[in-house]
Length: 268
Image (cartoon, rainbow, N blue to C red; front, top):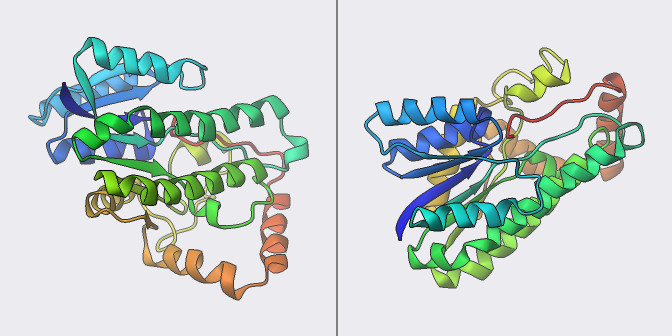
């Protein structure tokens, strides 16, 4: 079985840049997302670089049988994962009671259930190839989340799961890393209708830089990485220095200022 790197949410943003980064380092890719046209454009771009042309799997990862479908598609092509990159996710901005409950439950399904399924489905092939698992979390998973309660909670789950898998799978030669970016200018802001909502550098990082940092951390076998020194300081110090009540109040105030605005992250 030929080893490949499976990247979900590869049609835009961080996922697209992760695909480019892995391709630059010679990995054969399988690109997974809903938007087939964008995936095929990216596959053609990567092939034009001289890298192997990626396999394109257009699928809605929110479907209950999505991971089984991916497994069957790989087996039919006689390929298996050496690396799995779980990037597909979406976020909803606003107070939880005001947001659509069905959409929030769908967010839980994609951000948590599907990520967990993909994290565990190919452990045997990851071990055979001594590969790895890169789960894209967020600095949001390290902070309280008024104004995005379910999204923040879903990313906290990703952080907790990935840290545990880092320890559990290490004896089998599998590297497991949680990539926790802060603000990144992607489709999240455009779809949210919040122009200019991303802070300027050094807090914001480009998708390309986030992808480079994530790839390097995975290859080094690091448990977690937060791109950018400014966000590393925020992630490390804010929960320890500022009282939890103060953090909650500050984030709740910011959420109230943009109440009613809904955004979807560019991972899908």
